[in-house]
Image 1: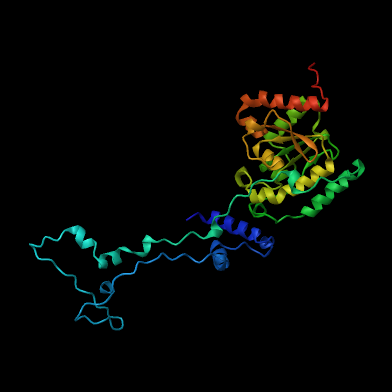
Image 2 (image 1 turned 90 degrees about the vertical axis):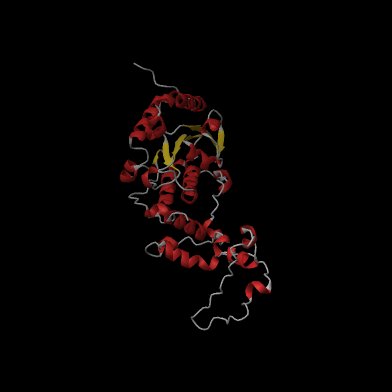
Length: 331
């Protein structure tokens, strides 16, 4: 039996598949037992195991023994073989009566309810979610367009992250007309406190990476796949990323960057709609919403393994060549 949290997540995803999106708006979240009762009517009827037809002698009482009356049950006396009997043990257990006893209910466990087996949806690329708008928003109107998206998000309760200790929704930060955009996985503790993406230790490293490219943070745009911090900085669940990423898609359509840098595997998975290793995605240009996509390591990973900083710098150099940027001279 899966833990209660896994059952609860399965129930929530099942209800979302059924078209119920406002379950979090109805007060306190229901307990797993309440969800089980709510969904019992949707569970398929358990299949009954076929029973073999036994001879009448196996179920009819022996002569001289009356059926049980009321609560008192009459137990059939078991025949005892003489001490000199040559009846083998195997012949005893093959009798119909013993076969009937061996068909215990535990031998036929009920099937697992199908609603507990929630398949993980295949990720769809941002290009598959909706067509790319033909008209571009004028640079002067982009700040207001981004603010309209933020207003639409509101105090979001669309996915379980809203009830996982979130403090602030981390929308995005930077130039609404940036040529270069960075997309990470999700906010951390520092970002959850400030409401600004990439301000912790990983954010400081990203600032250094941007400066090494000859840019300032204010000249790029930074956002994440999910806008609420996952508990303990875990990877966002598919239902969380699929619920939140359409807002990021709209941000990209407003900004229209020339190049997007996907920071880490989670960002690459949902931007491109592929589930591949980071090594197989690096070194190749991809496409998303009319922009070229470069996949590289997440700054948090580079803090854990500094030996990969050189590989990340190679990825950024390809971006610099695409945008015509030059690294600042060292004085």
